[in-house]
Each structure stands twice: as C-alpha cells, then as structure tokens.
Image 1: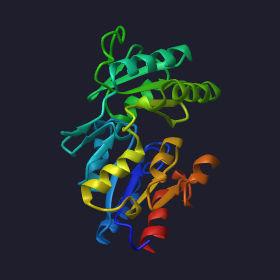
Image 2 (image 1 turned 90 degrees about the vertical axis):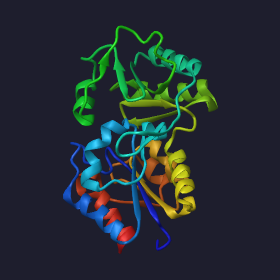
Image 3 (image 1 turned 90 degrees about the horizontal axis):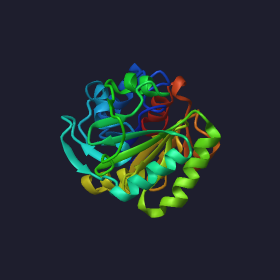
Image 4 (image 1 turned 60 degrees about the vertical axis):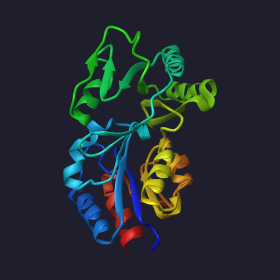
Length: 266
C-alpha cells in the first residue's frame, strides 16, 4: 500500500467508538499517518459543526465533508462547496418518510430542524454533535435549500423498506442510504461518500486509487468502490464487509487504529 497518499475515514462507528469516544490510539494513528506523508480527512452524515470536536485532537487541515458530502467546509466552518436538494425532490422525499411513519429531520446549512424535540434519538444526536436542534411547528416552506433529510426509526424492517422505496421513487435525483441502522439519509445525488473520494482526488491532484477509505455502514460502501484500499469495521454487516478489500476489528476493539497500523504503516 505504499502508493496510498490519503485516508478518508467515516466518523461514527469507525473513528469513534459506540459511545462517541476518540481514543488515544486513534489520535496517535493519525499522527503517524502524517509523519509518513499520508493525508487524513473525515466524512460523516453529521453536519460539519457536529464534527468540530475532532478538529483539534486530530489536527484536521483538510476539507471537512459533512452530510455525506453535501457540505464541504474548512475547519473554521466556512463553506467551500454545498450540494442542496432540489425543492421538489426534498418534498417528495419528505412525503415518503412520512408514508413510512418515520420521524423527519431537515438540515438547511448548519441548522438542524425538528418538530418534536422529544422524538427518538434527538437527545442522543444533540449529545453527539454538541448542539441542539431548532424546533419548528412544521416543515412547510423549509424544503428549499435543504442539504439533507433524515428519516428516523428503530424499526429495522421499516427502515429497510423505506430505503428501498426511497431509492426506487427518487432514482438518480437523490442519494438515499442508511448512515446508522436508525437513520435514513437523503441528500443531493452528488452528495455521497463516493463523491467525497472524487472531490479529494481532484483537489489534491491524485488518483482515487491512492485514497484509502474506512467505514462501517451501507453508505460507506459508496466510497469503498472508487478507492484503492477499502476497509470495513469489524462490527459492519456482512454486506458491507463483502464490499471492502480488508476488514479490521470493531470500533470497540480499536479497529481504526489497528487498520492504520496494519495496513498503512506496517
């Protein structure tokens, strides 16, 4: 893997543990990557602001790809590039989310909008990203300029059905994938983690084959395909593992650091 020039990492379940802890071994692994001349970047379904707590300990100096590539910012959270959903597509996606009886969240710029602050996962997400959502009476008039819509449910079968129906209904007009078992993310068709690989390759003048990627969820397989080295976390589903070239240990067993040490630094 001596030709790898870049590592692009998912955040939740990959770079951090289930309890959202960034371990000292993970920090040290990123430091060693830089010493080897390998750049490091992060991407997530989170908004860029929701990754801010990682910038300093990891020394992030590359574009931050929030909303699965829907919004690129620098570490001062200044927008570099944004891909928002067309208004009619956002409205259609919102209707599908409601038809499947999922809770709906809407992200516009850096605003996270909800109608029920006590709905499942709102408190947990607030703790994860370190800021609270804005509560609105309805989403009427708020779909234009939306960067990401999220359908939320703990019903696994309902989420699978919603994801399949969303992809069928929206086709190439949007990207729809689960970023967590209970989150269905809908973004601009160019706002997916495969697009993040293409963006970084173009920006730094390298081939996608020189980029390594690591993640744990179905939406991470979109960045696995174009990258030169793809690594699935140990707790990932069999489908995700089958899409990757390598498999590391789980996020609870220092899977990120183990992958860096074994596959990129050894």
